[in-house]
Length: 133
Image (cartoon, rainbow, N blue to C red):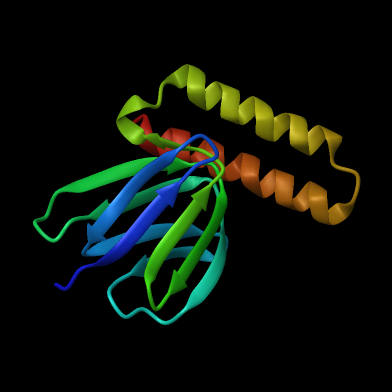
């Protein structure tokens, strides 16, 4: 595999910057894999798991709360609302994510915002269920 440049940025810091062989991204329309020379695309991110693999096979898996992915000729940039290594996610952290999503659902006024908040809550609950088994 040929490497490409990947940067993962959260509001607090630059989490990763370097060359990778592939990145699996949790897009709002579904997961997608970015490899070298991927077509340019911009996608919103849903809560989910982002993973990346170096050319040598080392991999990292992170929980992403949301954000945006920008695939360009220069590589992939992820602007994440939050990014935490999956190995560091605790039950309390998932409880906090579920509470945030539940509060957003309760505060939603329009049908669209209610639908989006309900989807987000369901995604986080499903992710917690998957990762806790």
